[in-house]
Amino acid sequence: MIKQGNFRGMVMWKKDRNILLFIIALLLAVVFLAWGAGKFRMTFGRSKSMPEENLRGEKQREAAETVMAVGESVKPDKGKVALTFDDGPDLTYTPQLLEGLAKRNVKASFFITGKNAETYPELVKQMHEAGHLIGNHTYSHLQLGSSNRETFRQELIKTNEIIQGITGEEVVYVRPPYGSWDKSFEEELNMFPVLWTIDPLDWCTNDSACVINKVIPKVKENSIILMHDEYASTVTAALQIVDELQKEGYVFVTVDEILFD
Image (cartoon, rainbow, N blue to C red; front, side, top):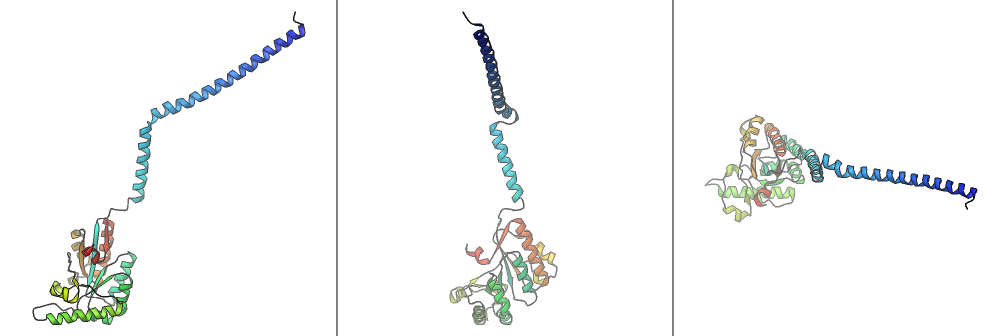
């Protein structure tokens, strides 16, 4: 026979146990529902909005667009171009040209006369220290002919000595005036002739726009541009040509990089 006190205790224990079980069941239900909702979002939410492969593709597209945005102003390398100047150095215009080239981080090739090198050795030294190539253009801008071969040869030798005395380096390249050349000098003097592929005739006009328009449309990879650093219009044209061609993706180098690379 169950005593009345024990009976009440059992009833209360059963009641408390039921409440505890109800609370545990409720907590389990909440956890299950939360887990199910998360799985639903992971499984169905992504598939409805964007499949996994599409998500990867979208991320790749966004990354590509970012790269394009950063580099959209950078064009691919279209090749090398050499800017060359004859007849200098000139006391007025060569310093202006050197300053403009330095600002653009451009190296050029200067074929100078021995007479001007003697007169303006500091300009020759400045060219050399800036990393420009310095070549021989004879002493007095002499054109080689059938009757002056020895005189021409002596002018080359004299100019080499003048330039080497200023820069301390042997002169290897020569730009023969008007392109007249005797190949036997190559072995006799160990010199290499450098001609050109584009001649805008800058010496016969003071219109820089005219010079630019004669150069830009003709430029292609490995072009060698002939100009003269003794005219204001040439300096203006040369620097604008550099600006335009750099935008198009060309790289300016000294002429030896085109001839032998």
